Amino acid sequence: MDAAGRARRERLRGRAAELFAQGVGAVEVAAALEVSTKSAYQWRRAWVAGGVRALASRGPSGPDPMLSDEQLERLRARLEQGPATAGYGQDQRWTLARVATLIGSMFHVRVGLTTTWQAMQRLGYTSQLPVHRAAERDEQAVAHWRRYRWPGLKESRVG
View 1 (cartoon, rainbow, N blue to C red):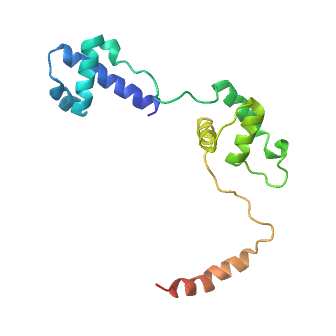
View 2 (view 1 turned 60 degrees about the horizontal axis):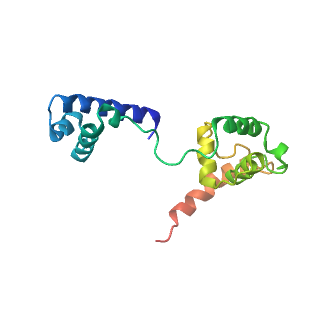
View 3 (view 1 turned 180 degrees about the vertical axis):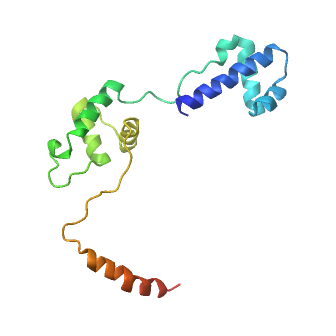
């Protein structure tokens, strides 16, 4: 859940606390706030035990990110220099495996591809297909094949 979702849930729990203070039951609170009765009962138990503070968000669930915001900014600067400066002269693309290797060499921490992808998402990167085509590509031959050969192959499917 993102920060906006957590803030929305926190507002709901605050409204639930107000309703509990007015003597409204958990089932009615669930119906009024359009949440499950299970959530409303859990919120009521927490509210009875610790008041409104007990309903406050504890932040995002799960472990903390492997890389701090400062490390991510250093990584961003390094990624913007391009793969050639990291020794990838043949293919000028960043892959998750390459970025994971870069993270390991920069921060002396070993991360998997999932963690690498999450770091890239935090930086605002998206997965993309390469924009470059092979230098040997013959656009006229490709157009001819698509126009005349491909329709015949599509129609002759077996099955």
